[in-house]
Length: 129
Image (tube, rainbow, N blue to C red; front, side):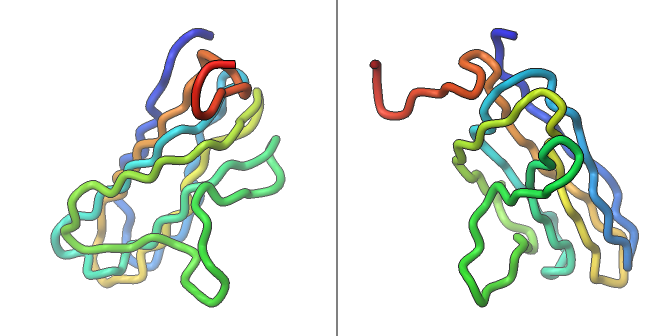
């Protein structure tokens, strides 16, 4: 597969709901970017945690959270937050977003995850070999 793909997670998340939303990886590739958007009125109540589910078992975070801090991203009316990452994925892995709405009103999930299938999981960093 010789292309990049954006996996776009959009969903209304009702109050008190926690769920994992998944999309299967189509081939070996590299997750290169995550863009998270929080809308006005969310008041830090929507918690988002992008990850990869390795062959339907282990969840691996795509963002590093230092020890002693929250292990999710949250916001309120923030501009889109881009996160550059380099994380290999393989056929039958799932790109996943763990989302939890701790507020009293419904919120909109808005996460885009870019996967580069062109070089598979062999992405070269920093130049030409």
